[in-house]
Length: 361
Image 1 (cartoon, rainbow, N blue to C red):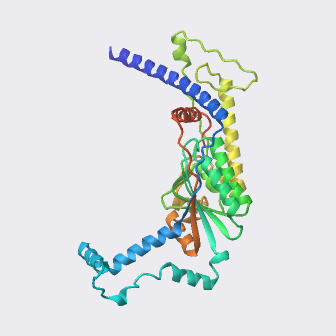
Image 2 (image 1 turned 60 degrees about the horizontal axis):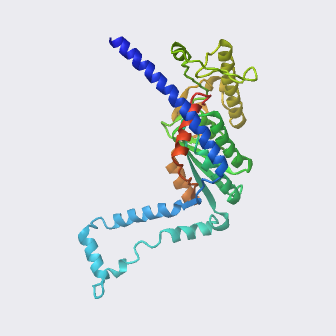
Image 3 (image 1 turned 90 degrees about the vertical axis):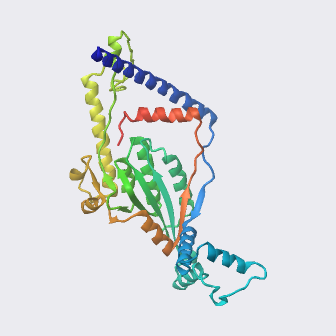
């Protein structure tokens, strides 16, 4: 009884997955059609944060706490009483305790010629990647904004990158956006705090310099693809699926129909071709890599990646942002996107489901 029950449950689950797949594909098509007709932009106003202000504010708070270690509620109440009309003012000689933070530093840098028109400006971009590289929509706008304001030789871009990789077209486009900065001769530094694997590493490779935390994961130079096939289940239930194509290799593998050995071979050829293009891309930006040794799909932690030449330095984004603020001005550029509606979210989920089975890096 139990084996038959589990077999029935497995068949039902497989059939449900097939139905969900078909419905998701239809929802994706409908959503794309509506979006193309509406033509509405999903962009919100660009957000720009001067990170120096936040860093200086935290530093000032810490210094004040160190100067007044007993600043409990009694001390705060006494200070408030002093400020009230008629309150006693004491320790006037200590009044200007912490007023020389930013101005003093600014004056020193002015004397050294490091501020004003010649100050180094660092534009901080953040990319949190998923399998669809959906953050590329914001990245392309952020890069365009930086290119309109940045000056070669003076400004640089610090990309805080976190991505395990994903579909080829999405990450190919993301890497192409970063290549625009290289083409404009804007220095690009990619910092990996956690992971930049596969398509994520392809993005990092575009940078002039790659920095990673000691235990950050980098590498995974390979290509993988998978696709379920429920043809035998449909056949057992007397369900026919017809697939008509014009062109010998218009469709190699299919979810519903019967796959052939010729189709499988062509699919593997496509995977290998994608891998070759991946290696050619890396060789263009990091010719020092031994791709025969490294393009195996393996990943490495930061310390080992440094020895293999996959990265150039060990560090974190926090270190580099602090250094950028000390050297000049650091601005974080963020392009917010409008939230999708229910149909848009279903479409995105459907596209993710479909893309997972087609050539993810």
